Length: 61
Image 1 (tube, helix red, strand yellow):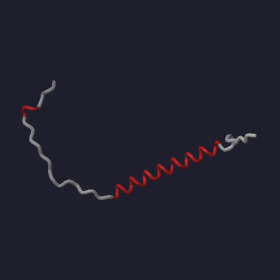
Image 2 (cartoon, one colour):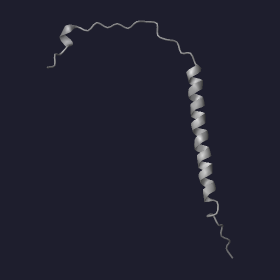
Image 3 (cartoon, rainbow, N blue to C red):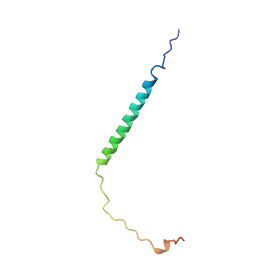
């Protein structure tokens, strides 16, 4: 004799679990973004200056 599990009763419950999991993932993602934003990365202090000769410019009309 085989026993069959009826899975159609709790289908609406699966959507609730999915929404909760997705909201937790989004919440953790925003928390990680806020934590990375709090890190003070040093700004570059060397000015980069490159001289480009005039012969490399092209005039487009």
